[in-house]
Image (cartoon, rainbow, N blue to C red; front, side):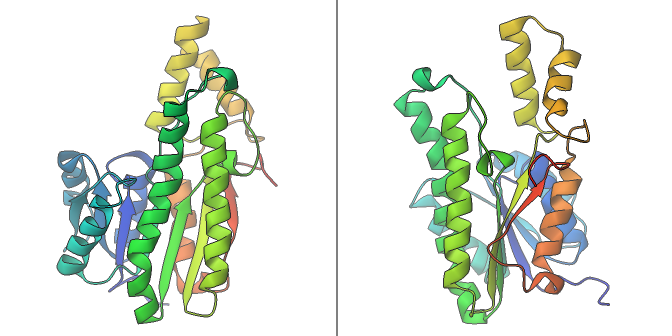
Length: 258
């Protein structure tokens, strides 16, 4: 077995300044990959990049739904670290509202960052993968893309779209050395979950502990998923051992989705 199986691979992770994205970056760097971290907060990205194992890592800034900024950021990443071999579309956002109070602006925000961002980044990365005859695209979706949740219809629709995009693109590139898969975390210990807990506390007056327990109860294991567990699923999908895994939506949710 190769000690660092991703040595020489250039991996770009979006939304990498914190949470799941930062953990994915650390995990891939530990496997030998050279990382480009993409996000909007350059200072936060640099803090993560500076702490990564290995050397040669860097950052680029872009808002993933921006059709001009994304190609420019990928061009910079290619110029500095070579063609992108691994793309992890992790950037995302979640906002809640009852369906009849879901504004057009909220709807468009959820589609833009969660779905359009994945589309644009995949378009920017794919030519280099096809030229090399090898590539991995991993889209971080959600159990919301595999089932429905009340009060997050826009987010759920966007994540269902991510899974549809994953399946379609996987078929297009199946014979070209590129795999496309989705990882679907359940409720995970991230800023998004903490914001959701604060929202519940503010609206209902319940304690943080009670709100956290309610989120954990959805998981048959009665716990919150940890970012490292999501990152390990990504790590596996990026390796040679997962070469036949394509177009899949892997649930990391303790059995919530089976």
